[in-house]
Length: 131
Image (cartoon, rainbow, N blue to C red; front, side, top):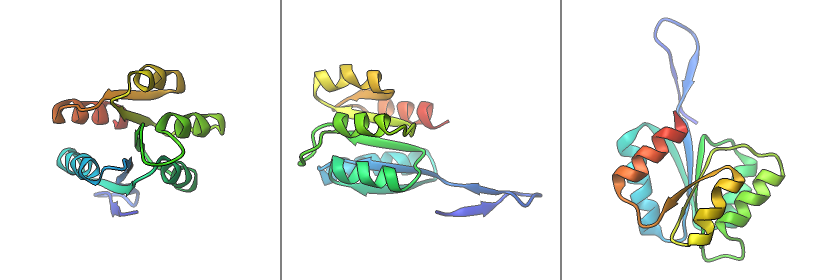
């Protein structure tokens, strides 16, 4: 992770880290572009919910953005449930076109966003979660 020295002090300020989980590379690229436009984020990406789940257990992120339906055995909601059951409190956003997942996300302390969403909606939600 990138760190920079604060002016006048010795404290390091870390970049905010975000993990983007979506099986559609074009959606991942759009989300990454939005993140780079609104802030100086250290962005990682994976295509499946299983990979997102495992990486979130392994590394600390300031935000994880899960797609609900990835081409894998685990859905975004299943990954979120498992992380929460294990005590992981990482801020999570669920990006989905599945109504049931959007409704269920807040039950697991995840912020839902209907897919497709406008760039402004994505930006506002990310900033509200990460700040």
